[in-house]
Image (cartoon, rainbow, N blue to C red):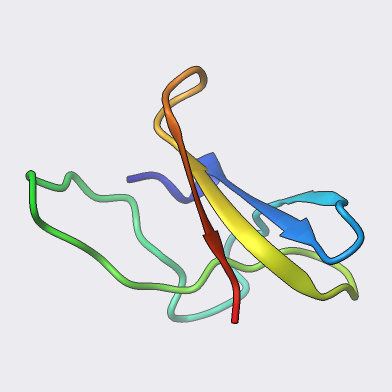
Length: 69
């Protein structure tokens, strides 16, 4: 798990990269075993409303997306 592999999408479809060191609950860089999970904050720069967050395992890995509530 690497926070740099997250992408945020806003309500107008714009893509945003993660801003590191902004939140004390920032999701960490960790190794996860199958079945393990982690929680944390993913923060983007600027004023916009997040619609979804995506995580891509590495540069060309499979992406997983979740809606932001």
